[in-house]
Amino acid sequence: MQLGSYLIRRLGNTVLILLGVATATFFLARISGDPIDQLMPIGTPIEAREALRVELGLDAPLVVQYGRFLVETAQGKFGTSLRYGEPALRMYLDRLPATVELVIGAVLLTVVFGIGLGVLAAAQHGKLLDTLIMWGALFGQAVPGFYLGLMLMLFLSLQLGLLPTGGRGTWQQLIMPTAVLASYYVALTARMTRSSFLETMHLDFVRTARAKGLPERRILLKHVMRAALIPIITLIGLQVGGLFSGAVVAETVFTWPGIGRLAIDAIYARDFPVVQTVVILSATIFVAVNLLVDLAYVFIDPRINYG
Amino acid sequence: MAERPRRLRRFLVDPKNFFSILILIAFAVTAVLPNQVLPHDPTRQNLRARLQPPTWVSGGTPEHLLGTDNLGRDVLARVMRGARATFVTVLLSAVAAAVLGSALGLLAGFYRGWVDEVISRLIDVQLAFPTMLLMIAVVGLLGQGLWVLVGTLALAVWPAYARLMRAAVLGLRDLDFVAASRALGTPDAGLILRHIAPNTVSSMIVFTTFQLSQLLLIESALSFLGLGVPPPATSWGAIIASGRAYLLDGWWVAALPGLAIIFVVLAFNFLGDGLRDLLDPRQR
Image 1 (spheres, rainbow over the protein chains, first blue to last red):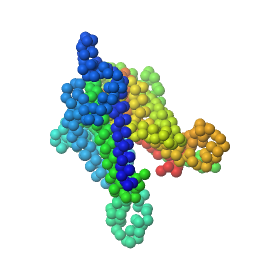
Image 2: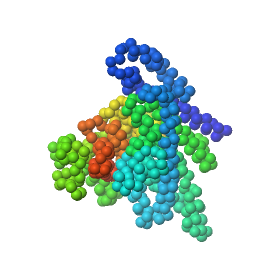
Image 3: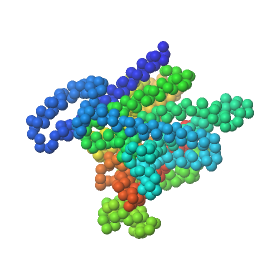
């Protein structure tokens, strides 16, 4: 069946992509220097260094190490943190919920405010509200996330004392990092929704609905909405992977204990197994989300062909 | 006949385009000015004048228009000097990404077959990397430096160029005038250089203008995280990071340089819209 072969090809592609990611990550980590230097203090006798090298399997030729790395990664063995001695996978999984929380919050904000403001702008096309929303969206796409974060912190935390400046635990602490993560995507979605609605409003079936004398509000929210939302939903779905990586900045500004912070700390400490784990697993999540969005798209819109 | 000059005039009198060009020229000029011409030496510390507020805030002096930072350095001078590293990094990486990405996109679109297959898979792999994490990993592992930064930024955006170019070439390669030239025996290189590449120039210019604003945002985030150009050079993200610890006593150190980023990003975006209407009116 056509759908079956589409699925198989898509899955094969995904595996190929992940193989590429793992390969790039492995060699990148090796280019940067000898991992032994990180493990042992300067001045350690050369025999002790070589003993550790053999123990960790770092004496084998690079190709063998690479092969071993691929096999272990495929089995879900991600190695041990050089710094904490904990399994890198567990460290990643410990931090994942915090980031997922941020990403879900940001997706909700994007759906509610991005689509909401976009529809409002389209409904008020050419009027003052439309202009205001579009200028807001332009600014939303131009303000760097870390800057927005610091300014929110300055006004809401330091001057007004409304929200805590960082950490995780209460819902108040969730507000600013989520807003910072979502700002760019809310702006992007509002602009896309507006133009998608404006395009759809001129199509024949909308004119027919209008000719039948249906109220404008009903036309907009029922007829136009259905047709205009498909590309928007896809767009939002495809941004979810990007949100995981954009979370680095929000997590840094608000000391949010997620995988972005984990990655930054691991890089500063040159903790390679953790860096590799974060990059490979985040890429896996990213690819999996995109695959799901594509599949959902196939089911939402039966006209699509699985070419 | 008069169509082109008329469009150009309309482009220039549009206030959005006009002010965008003005802002970009102003920052470009400050980027090339030598230190001696700046209102202050951007690196000179003066601990007795630390965290002085901007002129218009009570306690501010006309000496330091935008105030001073925690080491007593003039914020205005630092923003002006920061323009240099920021602009150089962003422009160089845009050029590198454009060259690499469009060359690969051209080859993929022109030759199809296995060349296309390989290049398209490369694009997929690159797009599967969480961008920010990839760049942090590369800069963190290879160490800070202008060229590492430029290479990393170029690595992050080349797939966008490759995709755009590939699609453009696919649309052009089978058009009649290309087919005719091929039938006359023009070699591949001639077809690509004479007939295909020139027809993609305007959409590449428009695309690059938008891409510059993206690169500026990414570059600022990286330098905010401490992974930008190494000191004593400074860029806007790094200046804001240095003001982070002094939000309470000296909000201006972080708040004012951020405006420079916003202005320049908006200028690139407006200019991109304007250039699209000017050069590529069918694209919308």
